Image (cartoon, rainbow, N blue to C red; front, side):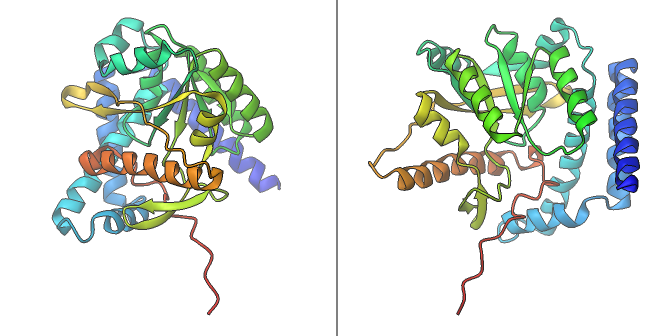
Length: 301
């Protein structure tokens, strides 16, 4: 237990130190640091195993080894740049507007007019944290449900960064509290960001690149319960480290009268939407993420 506590403390200090460094460096120096870190990670083979396993699972029958290697390296550069940018929370509103353009803003405006709230269906694309901050600038509060950190100090640090950026962070745990806060947020006609491409051990299995992937039904359940609209949105890094937010058309929920079937059909539907984005912008997705970590139980013969 003591070793674990020391490990967590060192991780927190490392994270806090990096955030401090990111905020004192000029933008040009920060991007240079990101490029250096990406090349070091690439040369050392950090995350190579999971990255190439994922890419071969998704594109092994469609793309050459050279193309897969190119996508892998570019994804390294992108996700390290995303991390550096997201750590630099001392960013002016003018700089944020300069960095991000918004495509499909009218889709968001039409949904907000309904007054039922927006479930932003996001994936591990681009700099989704700053995307939320940029959209919040447009006048509608944006919250993310945060998963995946057992480090309490780290979670508080992320929440502080979110506050500096004008975002609200809703911890995924405890689940009941998280659900209550999410429902209240949507009831106030705000934007709730949910990752639709997480590995979710308690979820349902749907097809993702031809393989079963455990997927969270939360976006569909929340939409059906509140009347909120599921609105797919991602952000893409373009030349000169500018970003383009793509707000897609609202996802129409299918309804058959069978609750379980409805959930399955609609979770598959939103998973396919995200898969199509990964196919279109493969270098923008986070291939270091263990999307297929949870496997279906083996059938007894």
